[in-house]
Amino acid sequence: MQKRQLGRDGPFVGAVALGTMNFVDTYGPAEDKESLRCMSESLEMGVNHLDTSNVYGMGRAEDLLAQFLKKNRDRVVLSSKAGITRNPDHPFDNSPEFLQKALEGSLRRLGTDHIDLYYLHRREAARPIETVMHTLLRFQQEGKIGAIGLSEIAPSTLERARSVAPVAAVQSEYSLWTRLPELGMLQATQQAGTAFVAFSPIGRGVFTTLPPDPAQFDKHDFRRIMPRFDQRNWPYNLARLKHFADYARDHGETPAALAIAWVLARAPHVIALPGTRRIEHMSENVRGASITLSPEQLAEIEAILPLGWAHGERYGEAMHRGPEQYC
Image 1: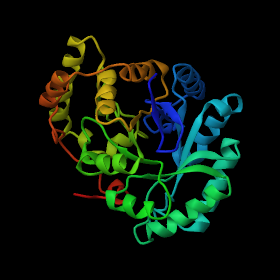
Image 2: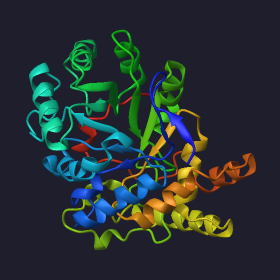
Image 3: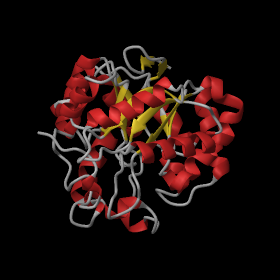
């Protein structure tokens, strides 16, 4: 697989990474055996960057990942995150005490003495980002983390954070139906020498040969509360998605592979971060890293799914509280 650098001074990793949120019932029931197989076979395909968080399954994703790391730690660039509390009255905590406890918990669950890339999962708006960066910098100086990352922030926050220490990566949702990063974050990260890690590059599973049926979502599937999947918006979105699936088929590709190829074509510092527990799906994602889209194909895709085409907001009211808004 093609390689891309994880920050100006960071390691080169596969252009497609693997997220672990799907390992813990976020999109319905998950089996550990299936997830472990996906990690193992993905690594053999060149997917050497694995991403998790202390809140995925309240630590269960890290527990599962630890089983895989026992034999593969030296082959993996490991990322995790902290800053979300799951307390509705105080959903984000970037205090030194909270982050210290969260990091120690992640290290313990993952069975490792350091995390290669450690993200602030969500910014606590009332706390200056410069103060938080000093906390993360201390973790780095202690050898507990390698590089610092930030998730779902605005370009202005990246600018302030970099005044304290380098930021190796910014992680934000980015796909053919979520394109806010084009309004500043893609440009800011490229200028800063910061990797842009695009999570949900296949749009919560919509860029697939058989798009999901919201009526069949498991009761634990968090897409149930996302406006784009509700009965007001989904029929309009599905019509566009079918058009894109037809285009992919006509070009001998799957929608997932083409969606990944589109994300990677946006800029050379972009890394695609799909989340799946099925190796069959991950194989399609990895295929996307080998596709080179021509200018004509990019224009054709833009005509099918133009900027702003998706009906409904990406998050409901409660989930909108964390990501920083800009533009």
